[in-house]
View 1 (cartoon, rainbow, N blue to C red):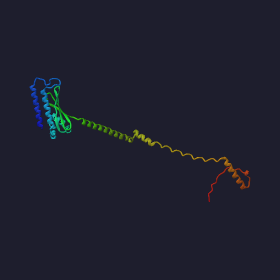
View 2: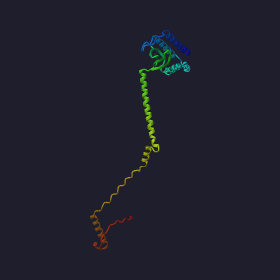
View 3: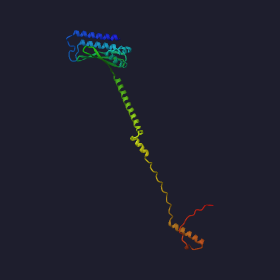
Length: 248
């Protein structure tokens, strides 16, 4: 396969020289944006030939070309190897478009694959030799929406994970000496507990009416006078005190 690529490059170079000798003294670019048909045909043939060759390479052949030492070959293998699993089997190659920019040319080869479509974009120098290639996947609308949804979910998930980590870190501040959270925790522990409410005072004994005292004193005085055989006028009752006696 390496011989095939070298052979294709040699054929392209030979054709380029033939075209240059045939139309020597004339300009390939007729006007701004216009390309000579011979130059365009040569670029289209080279771009499509390289595309067909690259698509049919096996994995082992790609690995061997990656170690070829040729800059263009390694660039082409890397570009194809990065996307080939996302494209699937080759179905059809479309019409190549060529654009001119000064002395350089750009050839775009649209290719239809089983999973997604792609574009092989080649850059040619003024000698019509390819100097770089890139493979751009043309994602369908369904695939684009799916990728957008996945990116949104991943973004929201990342935000929630970061918030959870921040909340966890903030909760650890109370264990760091000198931090405001730790000081607040210490102040809450040091604050004295509120004093217990004083018990309500016992109710004062009800006062004995003055009329009852006089009657009680008169009865006691009469009883004492009868016991002593004297008149109640001969003594005065100063106070009355109850004596507790043990029952037998």
